[in-house]
Image (tube, rainbow, N blue to C red):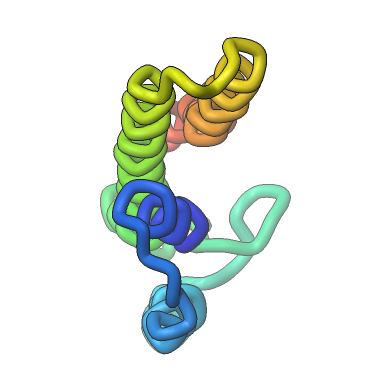
Length: 141
């Protein structure tokens, strides 16, 4: 999310001093995940969950409770960040496409190469969707 936000600020809005936002980066990158890790630790819901350690599913709490913990701590933030990244990359793609379509001075080869890079940029959130869609469906099911 921080990378897509930075790219959007730089490319679409022309912000050149991204260092001014570093305290917000640190908050988003360290404080939010720490909070999402500390809350279940304090609540005592971590434990063995199949082949890995996560929200325990050993029958000590209801299946709904386990699902709510997992959704709130992983899947909902995952999908919100994926949607946010999609929106930002689409903004960047539209901006660059519009910018290069207006620029008649650029040669076609350079323009096609740059648009190709921007199209690839939009594939990053799609990769996240492919990687986590089936796991999300499985956990909810």
